[in-house]
Image 1 (cartoon, rainbow, N blue to C red):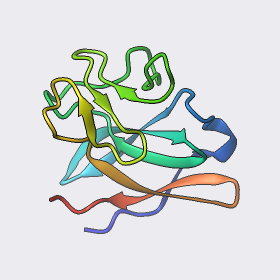
Image 2: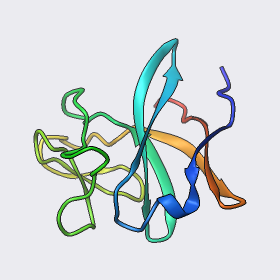
Image 3: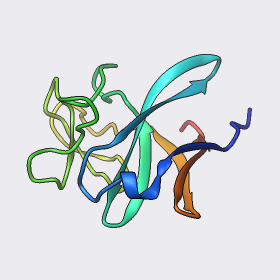
Length: 119
């Protein structure tokens, strides 16, 4: 099933290493929480759930980066993820990464364009 292209936010709302934007996507008939952040100039998005256990990552609403602003961190377990590709960098994620979502940045806005194929 192809997801409709949908506006997430204005580009200016995502600051490098800053707070993310939470949004909901319909995945296999269920509404799932997701988030978008900007890292090294690029907007990326993931399902908002740790790879270890299905808990949301943000330690405060829309805060997904650790104190260094270099890694995404699970507030519950401290697992660290690469903002660039969602891969597990350490902690209880045990090599399992975040599930990516396809986003596109154009005309001053960030758009959700679909769920990535499951591996």
